[in-house]
Image 1 (cartoon, protein in one colour):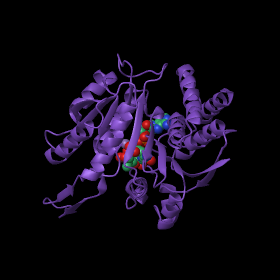
Image 2 (tube, rainbow, N blue to C red):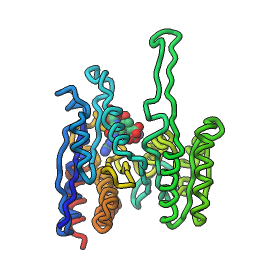
Image 3 (tube, protein in one colour):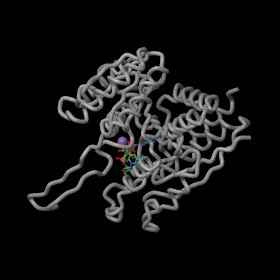
Image 4 (tube, rainbow, N blue to C red):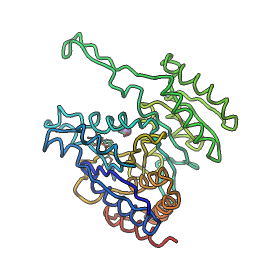
Length: 352
Ligand code: NAD
Ligand code: IPM
Ligand code: MN
């Protein structure tokens, strides 16, 4: 029996609620498959900060690095909570993990599954994946402010784009496109205004394209991309884009393909030097936390991405198939978080 060391970070709000269901699906899908998941739970997030003042210690980080993969629920307290004013848990925990573990690919698939209502009148066949750069761009914290609070305040937030960083994520996106039936890659940027970064992204895509003659290449400015995501999402196959554009586009992508409760993601270190981290796209949802009504589907689909990443394609397929079957029949029935989790786990168990 192979052993996989899994770090589990349930986090805050609905995070622990949905992670509990995701772990049920993981157990059902891997039972008797010759792989055992040895889990270590890390208590991190707003609750931990309020209790101890720590966001992510060096010891936490070192311990997490010793695992094969990470499953995360969601972190973040109630927006506006004054006790969290000095913490910045999103930067100090979530982004720190993405940067320290070199998660340079943030993989965010969007599929409109049969039976799911899209808010679009004519959604068509939605099946695309956003390859969002995860370690650079405006997220790096390269900024500062002077004369804060005065009428002469200046605040800078500089987007960092390196040839190394852009090339590796673009190469990953081409390989992903090449492996998909439609073999189409769309670069999304804003080359008409962000001329320096835009030029680097464009030249990199053109150069790597020469190595993937089977992949058709397209380009859209990010503002136009939001139009087509609403009017013609079926035109997309693989989208490659920078960290901030990718953040914004993937919330829109979630909304058009059935809602944030279904949107799964992987923060991938393709080199395998560090553990990759899988999490729903949504946050801790303080407005519904504790009520047992959060949809755990995004967290469960994140387990499918995790299994795929670990080379457990068969187990990943089981999770995927059970979710698709559940979605097809759920209609607008209102089930609790654990009812959805139990139903999907039972379906997994019934697959051969
Ligand atoms: P959110 O995603 O937590 O919630 C937005 C809306 O979607 C809310 O109405 C919520 O009830 C609903 N929602 C989210 N997930 C759902 C689910 N599984 N089932 C049903 N409804 C769901 O975004 P927010 O309110 O802007 O942020 C709340 C906190 O989470 C903040 O502290 C934010 O920084 C943090 N956050 C964390 C992550 C993460 O950990 N990856 C991501 C986004 C936001
Ligand atoms: C996401 C979230 C994060 C991001 C925040 C919470 C730092 O919105 O995972 O999409 O901006 O990447
Ligand atoms: Mn986001």
